[in-house]
Picture 1 (spheres, rainbow, N blue to C red):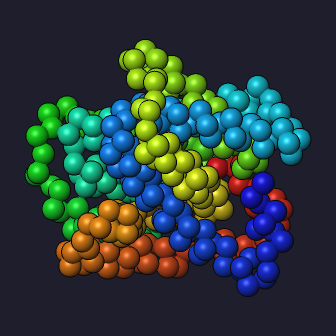
Picture 2 (tube, helix red, strand yellow):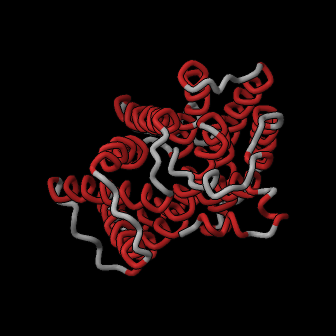
Length: 318
């Protein structure tokens, strides 16, 4: 669905696939925070918003797979993708959204999520052989500092109970675990098969939870469906597809480190969408995070130097 474009693209674009996909990941992944805010403004519960997001997405991807006559995944493929879907999508999203719904400021949740690259880098060194240099560790710590500067205005401004902070923390641990596990087992499914199966699994789990908690009925407002469409197009077909793609080509440490740039990028999203001003503190945090990511990834071997073959572009091996 997406991958032939990578292979058949002009040489100029193929040689910069790593850079362009990294930029696309940061922009589209950060759009998910805007989608969550759109859902809040439509008075939608997190389970309602997420459940319908994945129901529509799963139906769309199954239809695309049938039209393209994509081979239906085996039971072994489903077993692999069920585990990854639970960790990287269902558990991660529900825990982060519920944490924010319980009063954890979005900035604080973003800061907790920014611990993921350090955790992934630590685990990836021993499990995946993706060892980080002292320069990379310094870059990741600078990235974390930059995120802290960006969200500093949110820190301490909360009435959330202490247990609520465990929700985004658990979500971060789930995403980190899924990222490392996926890179370790390297499932052979294509990108379309991977996203389709994970969407079906996530839709089933979230809608089951929504029915149990009486949150399955969507609000009767166009704003809700605009939020659903935003999350499907930008956060799922954009952000998560790019997450799988970059992780498969450049590794778990790279994809996690790039997420340091999502909080400052979200700052620009909310400026464009809701008119919230961009502060000097936020810009300073963006610069610090940018320097940190450059230090962490500047000398790594990326996909820009890898052969651009069909197999290299399969990206089901995340």
